Each structure stands twice: as structure tokens, then as C-alpha cells.
Image: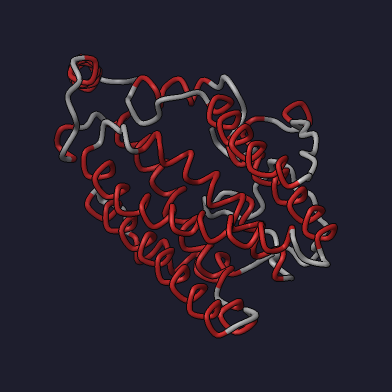
Length: 278
């Protein structure tokens, strides 16, 4: 049972948030606020690191020397983003060294079946978004992952830019700018592939990664998401973010003559605790 002092602390924190104040230090947090903040930041940190590992092989496999340099820069950016997030978590008392040591091998693991569909399920004990379990087997995979997932992450970061936790909000501004550059790289290559002899394969690859990205945003209308919004850690429901992402992608690919695949959520197939948290 929550003690009266702790309950009172949380009520005072909610009042401060309602008045538009930002939280700047661990001492200003209630246990509930810290728990939810750490959960969301760990998801981002683990995803950033897992993402960088997935890109590493493409430094060697990129089609040109120029692209090898671009991929290397993206790997550097994603690793830096992970470092920024883990530094914030350390300030909140998380044993980051132990966490990364425990999960380091898992971050690099991918599904062996390129055509696997894990929907919204979580495969490992780390907190990465589950799109990072899928293998990136071709240059078209790399491009469409870059085009879809980096854009999806950008939509999620839009909420963090309004976060009630000041250090996270400020840190994400630099991350957001670099993600914008990654997104532009994906757009450039989507246009190149749409004009190439492999256009049809590129469209199929886009559709595959688009559907996988649609699963990253979480179940709509969850109690956890309502708590995040009450605490100022998210600004929108998961479905609102997903729709914004989908409509932006539609506006980019339909002028190319590509079809948007129909996404059907699989919420009814799984208990909420087995899915990507929202």
C-alpha cells in the first residue's frame, strides 16, 4: 500500500505538472513518475543501441563508398543517441553498465527468418521496439527500414519534445535533428529505387517495413498511455501518433504510384503484457 507521504508527494507533483512546471531532478519526482520515466527512456535507449548494431554490417555492404560513409555516420549517430539516453538513466540511478552487459548480445540478435511476422510481440528481455528483431538482408531492406522506422521514431520523438522531464526534453532536441537527416536519406533512396529497374521489389519491401513500423506505436487507449499523458511524458494516444505517421507516408509514396498496404492490428491475439508497451 502506498504511504501517505508518498501519495501526497505524487499529488503535489501532479499539481505542478498541471501548472505547466517541468521536472528537473530526481528529488522532484514521485516514485510513480520515476518508474514511468525510466521505462520510456529505457525503451528508447535500448532501441537506439539495437538499431546501431543492425546498421553496422551495411557499412561494408553499402553500394558505394559515399554510402558507406553515410551508413557509418548513421551508426555513429545512433550509438551517440544510446549514450545520451543511458547517461540520463544513470542520473536516475539505473545501473547502465550492468544493463548493457546483460543485454549486449541480445541487442545484436535478429530473427533468422526474414519473412517472420512477430506482429506486436516482444522476443527478448531487453526493451527495444520489436522492429529491431527483424533482419536487414538487402539494400532495399536498409532503405525502407531507414525510410519507415526512422520516420516512425521521429513521430514518437515529437511527443518527447514536449516532455515534462526537462533533461530528456533538451537531450532529444539534438537527437531529433540527426533523425531528420536520417529520414531525408531514406527519402532520397526511396525515390532512387522507385525510378530503378527494381522498382517492384522496392515497393514490396516498402510495404513489408511499413506494416512492421505500424506495430511499434502500441495498443490504442491503454491505461498506461493515459498515465504517461497525465505525467506529461507523452502528449498523444498511441493511435494518434500512428495515424500521423501513416498519413505522412501515404503522402510520400502514393505520388510514386506505390500502394499503401492494409494494416490490421493483432491486439485481440495477445494479452497486453506480451505486447510492446504503449
